[in-house]
Length: 164
Image (cartoon, rainbow, N blue to C red):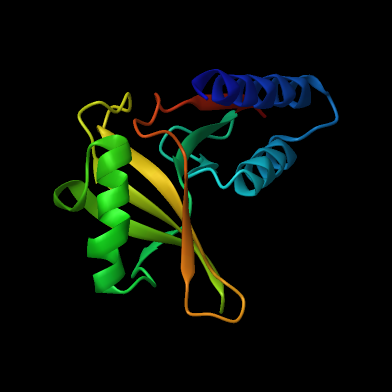
């Protein structure tokens, strides 16, 4: 499973490098393309402009968490009895390490959130890892199915710089 995930990220990175190499491709269209692929994969990460490092000569993009901070749509009961339990079993962290929920989208029968956790095993400088939680209500019932996307221990935060 780790090999498959590595190949997916390698393929995405190669595609990104191809896009960067095309003279007619602007950095904004590269960002949109990259983020579209990440959204389709339900990745917890997106590329955003780092305004603290960008200037009139260059634009710097960094990986940051998808969504906006907000309240989870999940009931407290489901959080405690299912979500945190599953995350703890898979990744080794849970409710005590929980930082915040970030809302990617909330629709009537499905919603997607990125949950952030304090994680000493994260390769990021801030030692935070994130998972995408995707929930879908089964048609004609009250049953909610949950899927997790992302690595338990988030990798190093990448950045890209483009001259203008």
